[in-house]
Image 1 (tube, helix red, strand yellow):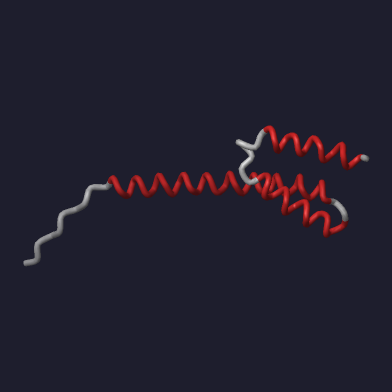
Image 2 (cartoon, one colour):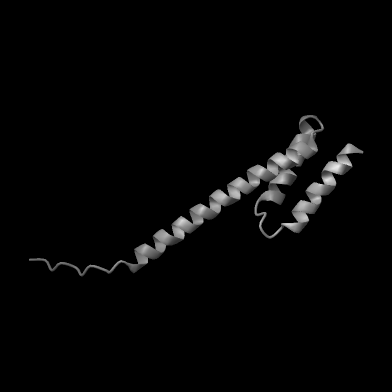
Length: 86
């Protein structure tokens, strides 16, 4: 009975904030399975997996943004004309 009270709010949170929860659902699934296999702690694993998944998604988004900015800066650099050989 306790599990139902823990799973229902978690499911509602995922459903309501799915647009801003990048990485949470995938992490929650993996964490839930790992928690269940490790000793019937699926809910705890799902919560931990959600947190880790969200952290990794934010980290990846930041890296992608930095890569895009570096690529844009590299494309905007003026090309230097070749130096004629003597």
